[in-house]
Amino acid sequence: MNEVKTPKKPLLFYYAIVIGVLLLFNILVTPRMFSPHIQEVDYGTFVRMTEEKDIGMVQIESNQIVFTDKSGEEFYKTGVLEDGELVNRLQEAGAQYGSEIVEEASPIISFLISWLVPILLFVGVGQLLSKKMMKKMGGPDSMMFGMGKSNAKIYVKSSSGIKFSDVAGEDEAKENLAEVVEYLHNPKKYTEIGASMPKGILLVGPPGTGKTMLAKAVAGEASVPFFSISGSEFVEMFVGMGASKVRDLFKQAKEKAPCIVFIDEIDAIGKKRDGHFGGNDEREQTLNQLLTEMDGFEGNTGVMILAATNRPESLDPALLRPGRFDRRVPVELPDLKGREEILKVHARRVRVSPEIDYSAVARMASGASGAELANVVNEAALRAVRENRRMVTQADMEESIEVVIAGYQKKNAILSNKEKLIVSYHEVGHALAAALQKNTAPVQKITIIPRTSGALGYTMQVDEGDQHLLSKEELTAKILTFVAGRAAEEVVFGSVTTGAANDIEQATKLARAMICRYGMSEDFGMVAMEQMTNQYLGGDASLTCSPETQTKIDEAVSKLVQEQYEKAVSMLRENKPKLDELAKHLYEKETITGETFMDILYKRM
Ligand code: ADP
Ligand code: ZN
Image (tube, rainbow, N blue to C red):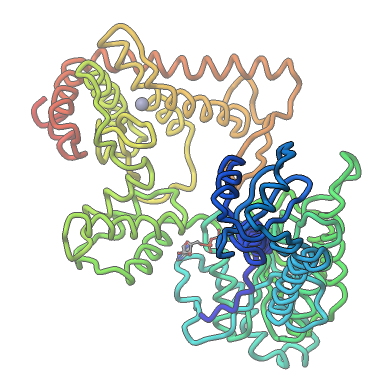
């Protein structure tokens, strides 16, 4: 795709260079160019040269004496001393008195040199730069230095543009957007019947799910120009600039219609306007301008605005009302099938071994976004190169999923033997608890190789397919599995370590959600006591109940987790021989697969 970009000029940088050059010029060049090189000598030398009659011209000034030797070629200067005999001695030596041995540059000329030339140079460079920019920004009517000009990049249509086929999964979103493509191809079909396309379409979903890609794909499929700008680019230091950028963007877009305008991160300008807190004038003006522009053009001018956000709940309602962004297309995290397709799409770009089981890889990468999956394929290819192989293998894929999830292996992290043993027991505790319960996902792999993310080891469980519903039993089983690591430490060593921090966090989160959101506790019943905010960005929750209830919730959460912990402890106590055997094996091998784990657990029981 040919992108015609308008790069931002670092103006300051150019001026810094100019100033630097001028300084050098002033320090080094000016004084020398207009005066001969004058050697500074002491008064004694002057007297000696006078006595030796090796003296030509002399010029006595108030603060220095400048003189030449007999030949008049060498120039000297010295300070002035109270010397009554000086004139006599000079007379004797046959010196001539001059007043212009060293011609001082006339004050006018020196003024010109030290002031006017730099200023002229300065202005000259400025002019040159601004002219250059104006040309780039499209004509002299633009404001000085392109201020207020939009930085929307124009993506000229080209045959290599992104198509819907490059965006894997996301079938619903594609279906929805296909209509837009159809409209851009053949607007008449719609206008004849009196239907008008929505002016704006909002793509909503977590980061890295392909929203930008989809917008580009719409432009690619319809072969129309694609303008893209990020919401944060509108928000400038100067009030009014953002609004002027919006105006400009729409002016450009209307000239190029039919076309797609894509505004990424629209929440940066489209946040709810609130009167208090002094407000953010710049952002509000920008938003107002955007609203005005969107109202200003008719539905069928062929300008289609796509915008992306992962915080839809924070958008100003005015932006979402009909006639503006009235259609909302969810772009969710890919499901199992979607993940498999995304992996395949990206694997087209690398040389892969034919026996890669994409479905297995996709299962391991549960919860990964499109961007993360693209990263997985790339990491796998890098790993293949590192190991001097010519193809990406299944093992590369699996390892790179771990890299993307848990970070690289930390080769130089040296655990003491005691620590290694504790980590082994901890991980086997998780794995054993998972295996001994119903309602849990099978163990895929256990490892105690430290990762750069800080994990000293981990147990990977992989579900067979996507799970859309989780039962209460499954959730409790998950909590038990989380706390089983710590339980193993207690059962075996009688003391506990910091290694369980992350487990505790996850167990607590789950327990709290069960009580506050899923209505799974007898004490509280089906009352929502928590509200999700930011569902696409990790999902924070805010409590919506009285302080008294909060206290009770805290108690209930702690009770729920504690119960599961006690169950885990007794479960591991009962299976202590297996726990020992497995931990010993893991300690020696450092990584064991789910199969080996199951073999040890069941076959030789
Ligand atoms: P978003 O705008 O939703 O944050 P992007 O569209 O910028 O995400 O996606 C980032 C990268 O992730 C893309 O360049 C692409 O390589 C990859 N990607 C994301 N989703 C998909 C998908 N559905 N199919 C193929 N690649 C994807
Ligand atoms: Zn753990």
